[in-house]
Length: 120
Picture (cartoon, rainbow, N blue to C red):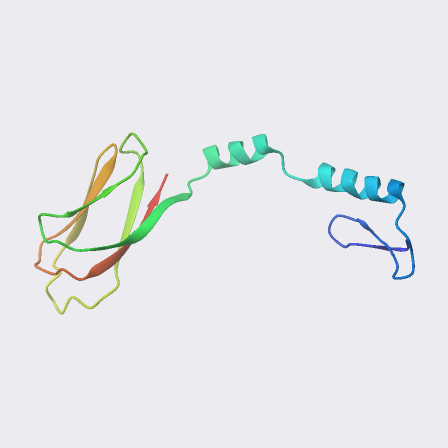
């Protein structure tokens, strides 16, 4: 087995070779050594802000559009982007955040759609 893969160095058998059990076990050991541990992933997710919720909804003026989540506190960031032309009826846009939901409001009368992404 003269060839190896470029990233993990796994042994690549030639087309006319039979793979031995030992070569197979060596490849499994290489994969296991190079795989991220579940604790590494959990630590990464806890340290870095990631998108947790995304979707589409419609503006509903100052009444607002309520979107539920499961964070449990108001320590998060919401990004709202209109995706349809409100023809001048949108006005100012703001977000009121709560522990388990947020409300997207606008000072105009537009009912056009928007995209949202929530990070925490």
